[in-house]
Amino acid sequence: MTPEPYDLPTRLIHFLLAAVGIAALISGQFAGDFRRAAHPGFDIHRQIGLAMAVAIAVRLAWGLVASGEARFSRWVPFTRERLRLAWQDARDLARLRLPSHAGHAVLAGLVQSLGLMAFLWMAATGAALYAYLEPGARVTGWLRIVKDLHEGGQVAVLTYLVLHVGAVVAHAIAGEPLWRRIAPWPARRMPPA
Image (cartoon, rainbow, N blue to C red; front, side, top):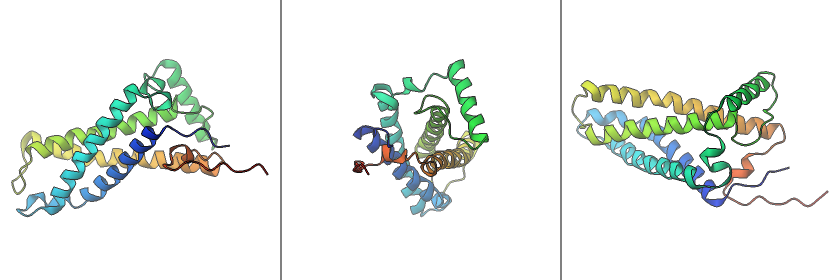
């Protein structure tokens, strides 16, 4: 049985984050041309990065005012009890069983929080690079540290994406098509057999 879908704003924000995030990851592979006077890869990545910062800001705002599972108060703060339940979910996964807790209340909420923090990290370090990096010039000092942190953030984002997509696939294989909750199109109701 497919659970109720998320509301339209939540679904649109999810796909905005996914589309812009993937575009940022891909364009980042060509942003190393900032060292040259002509730097179209860097320029494209900067513009996509701005879009990502806006998408993150929208998601953060939505997390404060939304109803239902999209609201951060449903999965944050991480109380001792929620962390205990997350640990229980992790043990279930180690035994090749899906977590028994639905929604973003425990392990899924922890993973989603880490994902949002990784995207926020990339947006913050990217904004600093956007404001202070001079294409064609050598990067030194504190800006070099920010650049290294930004590049290192790719690992955090990719790790989150593997966990997120892997969980969705695992649920689908187990007969729980959670992906239908976030799909931008309405779920079709199947007639009873």
